[in-house]
Structures are given as C-alpha cells and as structure tokens.
Image 1: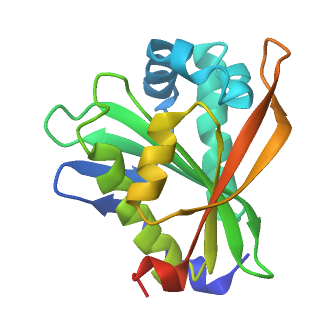
Image 2: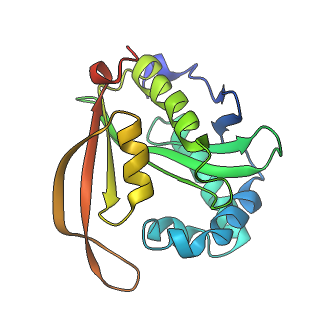
Image 3: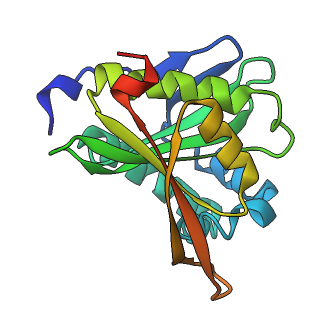
Length: 192
C-alpha cells in the first residue's frame, strides 16, 4: 500500500457528474448499465463482460473493485449524472506500475449520454486526481483502431498517439484486432 494514497478522495464533483468509487450493493446498477450497452462494449471489455454475467457476479465485481482500491491495485470509478442520479459510465485506472509510476486508463459511457461531453468532463477530473494526488507520471489508453469515439476523447484530453499494435487483442468472437496506444504525461497534461 502507498501511504500517500490512504486519504485519496473517493468522490469527485464536476459540473454535471459525480465521479466516485463504487459502493457495496451497486452491482445491479453496473449490471444494468453494462447490459444496456453490451453490443457496444463486448469486444472492448470482454473480461468485464464475463464478470457481468449475472447481477450477483456484478455485485462480486463491485466488491472486488473496492478491495483493489483499498490496496491501491486498481481504481474504478462510476460516473453518475447529476440531473437524473443515474449511473451513466465507468472509468478505470489499472495495470499500475508504481516504479515509473504509470497506469492504463479505460472508460465507457452509456449510449444515451454519449456525445454530450460528460465523459470528457469526468475524465478531466480523474486525470487531475491521477496526476496531482496519486502522483502518476503517465497514463495510457489502449483502444481498438475502429473505436473512433475513444480516440476522439483521448485526443481532446491531450493524449498523443504513441503507436499501433497489430493483432494485439482477441475479441470474444476470436478475432485478433489491431489496437492503438495513446499516452499522456503529467507534465504534458498541464495539470501539475
């Protein structure tokens, strides 16, 4: 465990969202969000898809994310819309390498809330937390070459394309797809 992360904020308020760590008994909300968007998510989040097979498994997944947060292995946030109080998205900081320190970040937003800038707003708040409070030096995004929405958000936030990986990721249907790597350093973010 990292001493400086003991009192890390578990909730961040933005103009239109609350971005926070999941709590016990929120598995059903995440299950419903994931399954409402499953057609869009299954190829990009196959492990999460398997974890969301049932409502009970979704609750187990939530509880594991809480444990991972407490032991500083992984930081998973839900995004709640202020107006409707509905869970509308998900952000995860994972694959942490505290020696650098660097981490991967992934995200998705409900299809009904996409294109409104909510993900950009929520990610900006999480980037600030990661770079300022967690002292992460670099975040990176790995996305499918045909995931234009994710690429657009990454570029809007200042991430730079750092490379392409051929045959890098196997989808649940068995296809090998190419991915792109985007990176953002704390210095380049302007947040430190």
